[in-house]
Length: 455
Ligand code: PEP
Ligand code: CO
Image 1 (cartoon, rainbow, N blue to C red):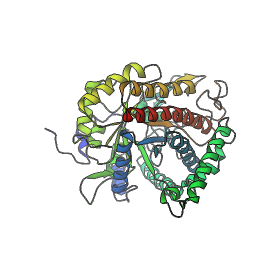
Image 2: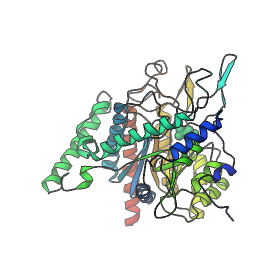
Image 3: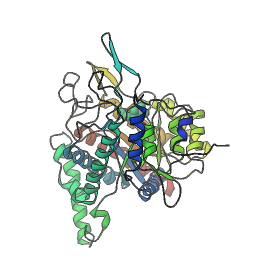
Image 4: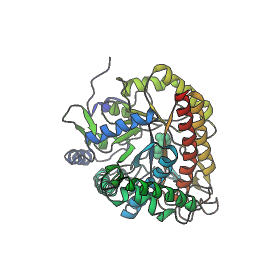
């Protein structure tokens, strides 16, 4: 028997990774204020994404989810947002052209502010301070006052999310949302070694679009060529904030209104978790990060809790095992889910299992990222299941945070443009290189499935 759910029922469960707010009166006043603010996203949009994700689970579409590890107040600018949007559009074009699958675009944007931490304390010599938990909670500077959790930061994060979403909606419905535009402006990837390959592909897309126009299909007559759908997502980590933005829908049920897609992180998906309790009552599509410690007998009850009616598109399992462990750890999970008959979309996060420390910097070797991607899709091919998505940390800026790749940093020059507030991101050149690798994998996978279906 399950106990009744309410937006605040998570408080009866174990809530990990939450800040201690020293001023409860200020916290409550801030949450009351937030609860009166407009929703950022709407139920019909979340439902549309759920239907899209059901298509991806069935092999009729592909999920491309990417953006910052942590958005920050300092890096908030229209150029940063447009840059990441454009890069996602360009990656989507590479993927769609090769696979002939519709690509579902979801940003880790407009709300990705709270970070789970491996340790509560950050040390500097003999000194220690509470860890930085993301700009929605405290400040990254190593200073005792800066690390105090301040509820007012939630209002600023909400405002930044609203402004980011406004620009993203403008990009998606305006010129930047057109396939023509993704094909015609290389912009940020111009200097990357993949640029000439990208331009060659863009020329073929252009030719296909000219042909369509000659057949009478142009942006004026075909809305698919005029605009794109762009969705937002983040880890639903800071529960008081998420609760304040949970809203009843007119048609019944509750929706998280802070983003279309919310996920539960690898550190908070344990059985009895307050995060799972909170997400169970929302109607949005939900992601679950699946790291090396997740056993099949923990995953199945989690699926029963989060998707009791086995709704298609409701659950995306985001595998982040690490390049050298995916082959041993993923198959048992896939088999358990298949045997139980739970409908899920499998997506690959090749970032979080491949983080290392070099020269004092957290980094990720690009070849390990590619390796995990290859192995993830190979495992699905061997199991006869569908790898239907990718989840990456990336930025349209030319940062030096992940090593390797044709346009990456070396271990020595990581410090040149290392700007992330948390984990290292792919830069634009690395992201396009990854898209090309994926396009080859997907092209093969889709071809094999078509042959199987015809046989
Ligand atoms: C993240 O996606 O930034 C993250 C912290 O992931 P995970 O929960 O998989 O460690
Ligand atoms: Co991260």
